[in-house]
Image 1: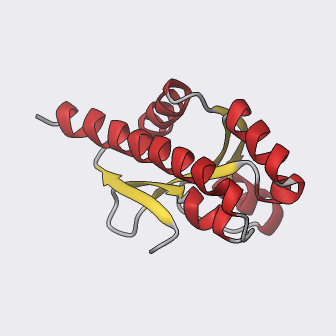
Image 2 (image 1 turned 60 degrees about the vertical axis):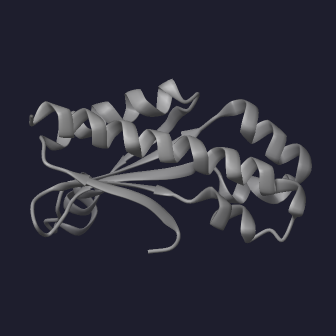
Amino acid sequence: MGYTIRTTVESDFDDVVDETIEALESEGFGVLCDIDVRATFAKKLDEEFRQYRILGACNPALARDGLDEEIELGALLPCNVAVYETDEGSIAVSAVDATELVGLTDSAALDSIGDEVRDRFERVVGTVEDAFRHAGE
């Protein structure tokens, strides 16, 4: 898919979530919201679903820069990172590609911010991938 940065790892779901949050923090992002999709579907729909968490990540300095350039950008914030069980049983980490996200605005002033967020999310996904690849060796 062209709008995400993604990897899959073989590990415990909660460990991957924890590692993802740590990697986000190391790149200057805080997790503003943590949506447990599985629990929400169970409670609201009385339906089962795979383990699936959506982490709403925000880097305050980059968000401020973006909002200074385009006040409507708030409708696209925070940037989401999903951690979920795949059909094959591995765990996926999928971060929004911020260049695609800010591309919706048609504001060239946001291009460098989108690039910076994408670069940081690529490092986050790479950090998670490395953590679990090395754990299995």
